[in-house]
Length: 117
Image 1 (cartoon, rainbow, N blue to C red):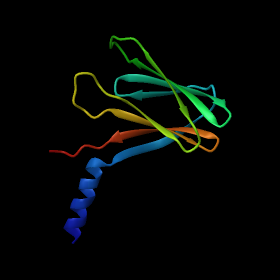
Image 2: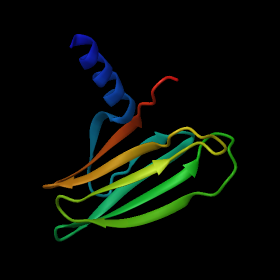
Image 3: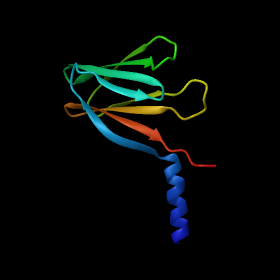
């Protein structure tokens, strides 16, 4: 029984995302994150109960490329996922989860755990 539970725990760890601590963002104050080799900047404005969330993803370091800007709208209770991977690899992308909960917008960096072969 103990061996079965250990095997199930290991299997779940292989497919369940790992969440780091959430960062609470303030209106018009950028939160800066790193997803794989990309730099990510996020800020938002408030319009009633809706947050207009602006996300800019730019290549980090010496990687060529232009920044990409996304604009989305989140109402209370809604969430959005932002993912970026490394070009030319099959590695799972790094992901940020944005959640509009109450009067807060939180960003949590999710890292996919991959099982060893």
